Image (cartoon, rainbow, N blue to C red):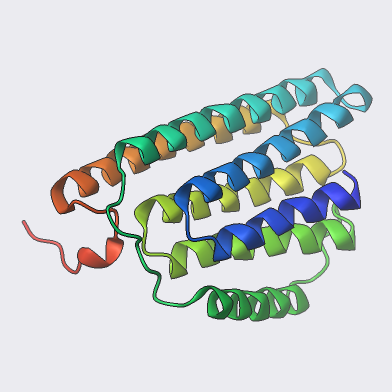
Length: 205
């Protein structure tokens, strides 16, 4: 994977972290997923047929997730914008500090170059930050998907790539996660009239 593609993927994660619109974040996570899938397809001729199958799965997964996320946005229109607890610049600053610290503490991974490791860790950190700092349930789901994209990025960059059985299992996990997560999101929206997770202060029988 070229350095330009790698850092475009990371830049899309940065934009997701500061974006205020769910639709924009869905487009950005779709770009991430498709770039990783296309990079896998480009690398496929030099690798095994199993890797080529896994690359196709990555692309199909990206298209499917984008469709269902966009459908969820259409069905759960927010009357007012869900405000995060931190403003965009504060989210960005805290996340960048956390990512840099993590980069310094984590030892080099032998199957990744330093640049690939930096990109993967940055994307993983951005995904965690989305989950922890955003209140909109759909954006939290997108944060988890960004973490999954970070794992897929590392797998594509690793020598030999992704064993197809692992990618099939990961794809199945993502499909189940998205189905359950979107079902909960729509149920929360139906009950509360919003996807703001801050309104769920306590659990009751």
